[in-house]
Picture 1 (cartoon, rainbow, N blue to C red):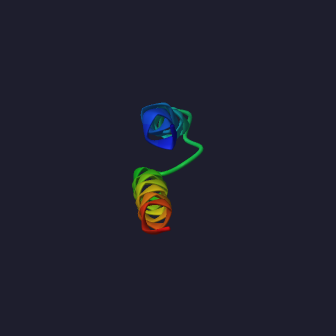
Picture 2: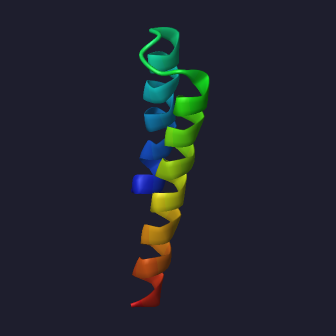
Length: 48
């Protein structure tokens, strides 16, 4: 479920770049963190 919502979250981050709310580097960092947390959560769910 979370994996399916990732593109919409990326879209929100991209829109914040266009509105100058985030710099491109900060947005890339946010996307990376989102993906990393999702991967960690999935790995944890698969373990137990």
